[in-house]
Amino acid sequence: MRETATRLEQFYASPLGMAARDMAAQRLDALWPDLSGANVLGYGYTWPYLAPYGAATNRIVLAMPEGQGAIAHEGKRGIATLLTKGDALPFSDASFDRILAVHAVEEEETTSATLAELYRVLAPEGRIVIICANRSGMWARAESLPFGAGQPYSRRQLKSELSRAKFIPTVGSNALYIPPVRLLTRPSLIKGAERFGETVWPRFSGLVLVEAVKRLYAPSDRGHGQKVARPKFSGVPALNRSHANKGGVKKSDV
Image (cartoon, rainbow, N blue to C red; front, side, top):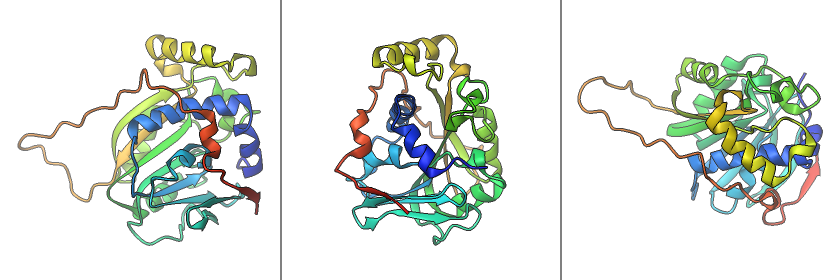
C-alpha cells in the first residue's frame, strides 16, 4: 500500500521531513544547478524538491501515482498536478528534459514498467534522478515514516534497475545521516552528521540518489572517451527550508 499524499505533505511539514528534504535537495542542486528553460517531470511526491526550480523552468508537471492521491500545486501555467498510472503516463514520447522520482519506484508493483514509461517520456540526452530510502540505513527501518514504506534500494541496486530500463547511470550519492529522531534535527547536528557520515560510514545513509541519462546510441569502446566530471556533493550548503513555498505557491486537496 502506498503512502498517501496527505501523509507525505504532513511529513514534509515536520522537522524530520524538512531535514530529509534539505539533505537530499543539496545533492540534487549539485547535480542540477540550473534548469533554465527545461521541461521537468516529477513522478511520485516531488513538490518539496522541485519547488525551488519553478521560476527558472519552462514547465514543471507533477505526476502522482494512483493509490498515493494528489495534492494540487499551482505553477506558472495553472494547476501542475495530475493523477496517473505509473505504467501508462499520459505524455508524448520525449516530452521532458529532466525527471525526478521520489516516493515512487520503491512503492511500485511493477517497477520495470514504470521505469520503461519514464524512459519513453524522457528526451534523448535527458536525465533522471531517483531518490529513495537506502536499504542499509535506519530510515528504511522506520516503518512509521514514509521512507520506511516500500522496497528500499542500495545505490548498486538502483543503478541496476535503471540499466535494465535502458538508462545509463552516471553518478550516485548518499544523504541524510542523522537517525530518524526528531530531537536530532537541529541544523548544527544535521550539518555535523552529514560531514561525519560522508567520511566514516557513507554506506549507511538514510537516502540514496542516482542519476542516469537516456542515450539512443550504444557507447563505443574505441577512440578516446570523453570524461564526465563528477559533481562535488560534500560542502554544498543546504537549501533554505522556505524554498518549499517559494513564490507563495497555493495548495489545496483534490
